[in-house]
Amino acid sequence: MAVSQDDKTLLALYRIPDTKEKGFTLIIQKYQERLYWHIRRMVMDHDDANDVLQNVFIKVWKNLENFREDAQLYTWLYKIATNESLTFLEQQKRKTSVSLSEVETGLSNKLRADPQFDPNKLEWKLQRAILSLPDKQRIVFNLRYYDEMPYEEMSKVLETSEGALKASYHHAVKKIEEYIRKGTDI
Image 1 (cartoon, rainbow, N blue to C red):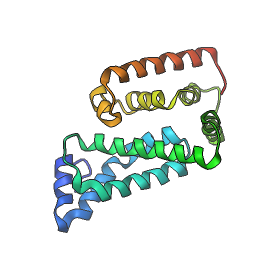
Image 2 (tube, rainbow, N blue to C red):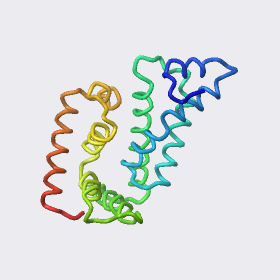
Image 3 (cartoon, rainbow, N blue to C red):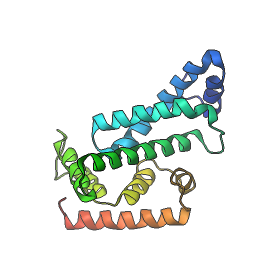
Image 4 (tube, rainbow, N blue to C red):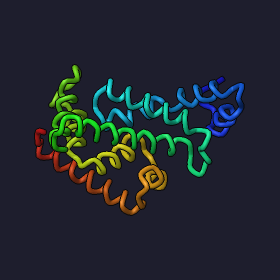
């Protein structure tokens, strides 16, 4: 069975007891890579992203039967992934009893520890610029820029108005442009 099946078909498979696990597996196969990268851009570390992704799919497994299809499946999944990522970052902050700026410095250090890291390449400058954004702007920027999520869907994921999201994205883009133009180092 192809992974590219539409969500209604996958949900129908999930809701039949004999094909429940198969339906869930196909949902995972369809969305795990997109969700992984969404999470990874927030938590920076591969192992942390995998841990958060595992927690996301545990939550999805426990709550998928209650999914009413008021929103698209991927919107619901992104909402869970975003909330789990924010929870993870908050737990990291509490565990270490450090300020948010120190958590951001830690994320920056994880980025720099990547064996592919080259501070002179534009893609790395972009990543460092994104890390310098406040959490909300970083999430909005990632959803719009990398995931190409429409503002309407984003407003469902983040439970914020489209206007506020457009403003956050605009401010994020301006800050990133300024960061790259100045060549500021984190």
